[in-house]
Amino acid sequence: MKNILGVDIGGTTIVAGRIEGDRIVEQLSAETRAMEGGDVTLGVLKDVLRRLKTDKTEAIGVGVPSVVDREKGIVYNVQNIKNWDEVHLKSLLEEEFGLPVYIDNDANCFAYGEKIYGQGKAFENFVGITLGTGVGGGIVQRDQLLSDSNCGSGEFGEIPYIDSILEEYCGSRFFTRTANETGYDIALKAREGDQSSINLYNEYGKHIAVLVKIILLVLDPQAIIFGGSITRSFDLFKDSMYANLKDFPYPKSIEKIQILTSELDNIGILGAGALCITVEKNKS
Image (spheres, rainbow, N blue to C red):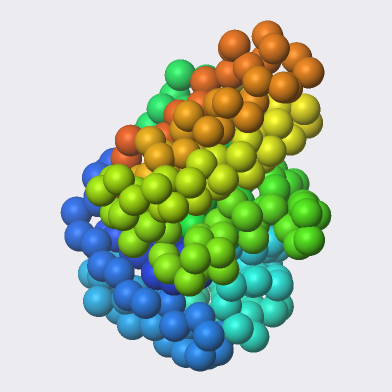
């Protein structure tokens, strides 16, 4: 299988690419239009795929920010897309395009992409974390992506925290809720020396440290690899994160853990494509 469409559906943007071999040869993006309802989002997705599909396309892989039934291709309870609950996405897309379609959690696609193409190659056990509108995780153990019943393991963003859940403090809504600005705009101000913006990213780093502690206590991986839009500002919250890891009860774990950021753009697209290939290989 050499020609695949890979899709990464985010709460804000749908990013898709045509993959030939191990390269993205064409890429498109569109606003998810999440608050307009699931039918609108589905229409956007289909439009993007139509524009990318060629006569040589063999399969479509889709990463979705939710728990999914891999075998049936049903998407459940998408928190960031209005009215997307129990969507039979696999059958809808297969009917539309006449190609095999494979659905998985978007953070799983990210982690698998890192394992095949990125920094995850160096580790047998690691966790890939996506920091964007939502916060999700993909878990790689013994060189294999953890395959659970509903792709729900690694949903660290849903853990109860303070007055809400971790996602509200580690995702992009932390910035819009706290400062009524995007994390991107606040990062620009922080880089210009605005102290209140710097302080906000320092506070964000404290919350990320809590997320790291949970991962260490539950899974104790060799590495944590961050991806997603907020990761572009890692330099603004890294020091605060490490400062707030100093009280971790097992100092050796902090010494050994490697906390990295993805070096590849749109690794979720490649990961979705790689999962297609893996599923097809396992069938034969």
